[in-house]
Length: 136
Image (cartoon, rainbow, N blue to C red; front, side):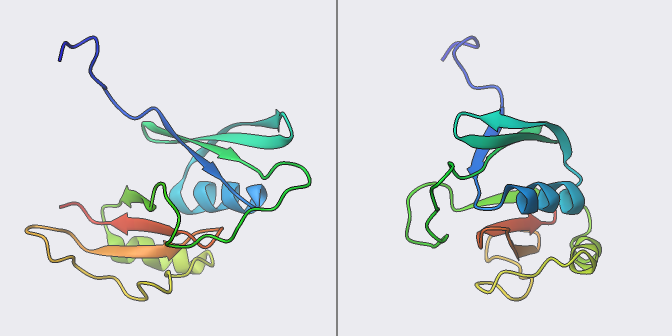
């Protein structure tokens, strides 16, 4: 594959949320994301956040529509994963901001993979899993 046709990096991930205010707050306060913009978009509102080199594009529901509850039985991404230097310090701060561990994984753990770091799953604003992990 030539250099011109190869993928260099992920530019952004788009998330649809039932509560845009809560989701913006979750990623800005807990993960330190920078809110780049927020504006109407067609029958929705959208926000762009920056987390290091990654951008999150957040979409509200369309006016007059309701999203289905998050569950493990839908296609698409399963979770977002963020690396932190100190998982315990991050989780202590997260809990002080009202974040909770996801019920599917109520405690941090080390996956059975060679040289894996510890992992925890937070309960995201729409019930989704948001992974936080130490470096491998």
